[in-house]
Image (cartoon, rainbow, N blue to C red; front, side, top):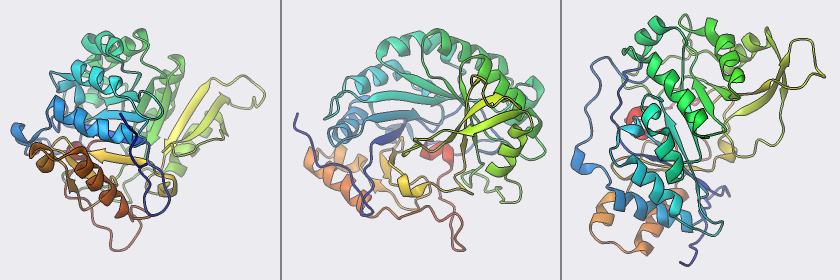
Length: 341
């Protein structure tokens, strides 16, 4: 098929990364994401079907999207997840087939890692905030650490790499595990990525004072390891560092670590991401307060040209930054579980 106009916003940022939420459902209830009782789920009929997901993703890929990240909620809860991955991996644009990756809590990977890899999934990011079973049960409100760890090992065995592990440090909760978590990742050839807690929780309990900053995280790690900044960040959200034994700058790196400082070190100037919610709403920023409805025209039989125009209109309205540090910042109405990571 013919290529479409590239996805460039009014600030000159070319967009190549599309993050697609497949469901707002999750089998955990992490304290920094949603309250213990959960949140009202999207109506099943409102969720995009496999053909609808492929229709939107196909337009995006032909317009230059080169990476599709499948998110949730928990994307492995979709019963058609293997078919979704296969369909996404088969799409083709000006640069060929997109790389298809996934962010998951890992619980379903023990059974699904091999089928997903065979369907075309390239790699996974697994959320892991603690290695202590009792603490995991407290944070996630579910006793599923063993399942998550088994999922990580299954992903490694299936070749879903380079594997990345995502950790949110929370003051007074798991900061003491920063180094053990990093060492766990390094021992498996994975890259741990520390993510600043963001104001995207359903309960709106986030506070700047309670957030562990990137500077604090880096200081904790540098007390145990030597970190050397790596060049070539580009549009990636993480600042990456080579990790070496303390006091041995000439030693071979043990691996890498990333720090995603969305709040204290914003990287909006190089943002190349768009997000599609599970119910077909396009968001031009994780913290956007507005959305563009693609589901209604899609179900109404709108041609590809109409969907393309809507995507470009959304891009044209994209702000230069997320505004978290502005006095008038408003937290998005949707929580992270409903937006997708």
